[in-house]
Image 1 (cartoon, rainbow, N blue to C red):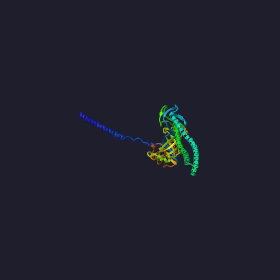
Image 2 (cartoon, helix red, strand yellow):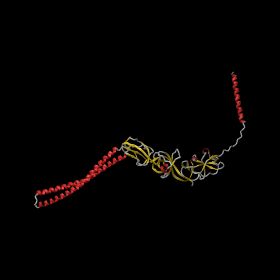
Image 3 (cartoon, rainbow, N blue to C red):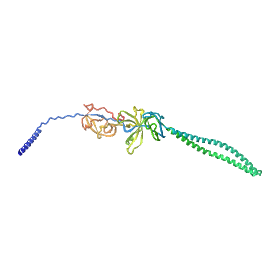
Image 4 (spheres, helix red, strand yellow):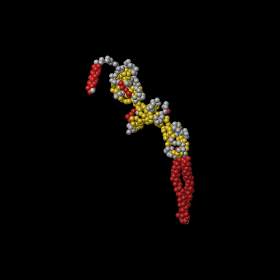
Amino acid sequence: MRRQIIVSFILIAILFTGGIGIAIVLVKTKPEPPTRDVARPPLLVETVVVQPQTVVEPIVGYGTARADRFARLSTQVAGEIIELGDWLKPGVEVRMGQVLLRIDEEEYNRYLERAKSMLDADRAQLAQLDIEEHNLDRLIAIAKKELDIAQSDFDRVKSLFEDGESHPREFDQYHRALQQARSAHQTLENRKALLPSQRAQREANCRNRQAEVDLAQLNVDRCRIVAPFDGQIDEVMIELGERVQIGRELVSLLNPDLIEVPIELPAAVRHRVRTGAPCRLAVDSTDEVAWSGRVQRISPTASETTRTFKLYVEVDNTEQAQRLVPGFFVRAIIDGPTLAHVLIVPRGAIQQGRVFVYNDGTAHERDIQVVRHLLDQTVVSGLQPGEIVITSNLDALYGGAAVRLEGNPTGPETPAATKAQSTGRTEQP
């Protein structure tokens, strides 16, 4: 049994070895198939002809539109809302001075009447001073006459007394009469002298009372909330019958005719923007609707943390086909400086600082220098006017590759110069 197993293994080994040998002989003696060189067709490519152009550099930024005139109307008096029309809703147009709602003014009217009464009392006291001054003038005139008479009588008695013709008692009697007349006259003069200070005090009281009247009237007027300008209601934040305190926001109002968009830009482009520059705005999700505006002003400072600065674009909604809505987040393309006689290629045609140039059916690599990116276009140096730059199938190209121009498979005719595809304004020289 053991011998049979050993013989079987030997036979299997002989057969396996023989099979390998036969296979090797067959492979070595296999005839070679005929070969033929297959010519690869030239690669079909798109191109642009580089020509000097004058282009306005587009500067891109983003911002959120807001109404130039916006107000949150809050109450300056406390009280109950007693008038709030059903018409007062977001989107409703209102006119400047139109009453939007009313706060109960009964308490403030009472303060106003009290202040007016006190003012009338002070004015009456001030008028009384005029009467008192008039009466004092009459009394002073009478006292002056009495003083003159007393002085004349005293002078006469004094002369007689000195000549020994008058009794001392009579002299004393006229002397006392003179002193009394002088005292009466002086008292009246003193009372009149006090009138200017009394008048000034009562005039000051009248001014204070008038201020109280004005303040009370102002509070009555503040019970009527009116629109400060023409516009539309943005939000209503109170209800009829609600009691509000001073400072409570009631209604927000905006005028959508003029829109302002703050745009944040890198500090590096600060010297390339200017006030008055045209600007095109659009929502990133769609380019179907766009708005035109102008740079109204530029912030004089830059952020220390973000190294950016802000400029403000103004959009006149009355001149737009469709209004720009406050709150829209928009992309702004601002006209920067004009670049004259520059060479422009599509940004996607540049790979690692090189482009492929078409010449006589062949693609040639060319090193270029990027001067400035203009959205999907790039200002470059290192090319010559009239050279043809390949813009498609760049991943399959290499230096020396055979290529043919789209629409011209038979020969490398030079295509017409193409205009730079940029959102900036471009002119052919």
